Length: 218
Length: 130
Image (cartoon, rainbow over the protein chains, first blue to last red):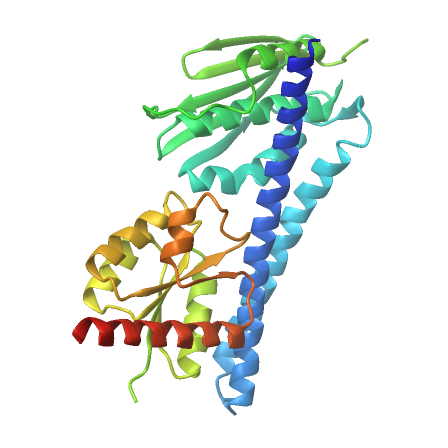
C-alpha cells in the first residue's frame, strides 16, 4: 500500500471513530441537559413552597427516568460497538453490529433530515471477520450518502446471506443535492477495505452491494 | 418593571419546555418552541428580547435562523445553546450571538447571561433612538 493510501486509510479510520464518539457525546449531553432541568425544576418548586404541584413532580421524575433509559440504551450500543474493536478477527452477529452503528449514527442522519432504516435478514449465521473493518465500510457508505442526499431521503441497510457469503446492501432513496461534499472514503479506498475483508463490491444507481465470506480467512 | 421576554428554541421538547418553565418561575416571560418555523412565527407574533437557540436542530442551519430573525428584528439578542462549543469557522455565529452556553448548563449562570443580553439590547435601542 502506498503511503498516500495508508494516510487516507488512517484518516478514514480516525474520522469514523471521531464521528461516532462526537455523536455519542452530543446525545448524552442532551439527555443530561434534560435531567438537569427536570431535577432543577423539582428543586425550584420545593424552594418556592409549591408542594401541591404533585403532577409536576411526577412529570419531572418521569422525564428523568426516560432520559436515564435513553442514556442506558445508547450506552449499550456504544459498549458493544467499542468492544467490537477488542480483537481484529472475531465471531459476531452482523445484524447486531449494524444495529449498533445505525443507533450511533442516528443523530448524524437526523441532522440532515435523512432517515436511517434497517431491513435485516433473519437467521444469518454468525460471521467470522473483522467487525470494525466491516463497520468502517458501512460507515463510509452511509456517510457518502448523507452528504449527497437531500433532506427527507432514506438510507436502508439490508442484510442477507447465500451459501457461505454474507450480503450487505446500502440503498439510498431520495433526491441528490447539486453541491456534493466529499465522502470520508474514496471509491478506491472502499474497494481496498472490502478486498482486505475477502469481499466484493458493486455499485449501481442508489445501491451499493458488498458480499463477504461468512468465515474470513478460512 | 416589565419581565424580559425570552424564547427558547430547541428540538428536545422536554428540555425546552422545562427550561422555559424554570425561567418563568424566575420572573421571565419565557416560552418554548421546538423547530425553526415556529421560532420565526413566534418572533413575528411576540418578538422576544432574548432568544435561546439550539444550533443543531434536525435539518436546520442555526446561523440561517439567526440571520433571518436579525434581519427583521435586529435588537433581538441571541444566546446559542450548544453541546460542543462553536468552532472558529462558524464566525458569523460567533460575531452575531451575544453568548454561547454549553449544555447542560447552570440556570443561575444562564439567567446572568440573559440579564446581560437584555441590558445590551436596551442600550442598543436607546442608542438608536438618540
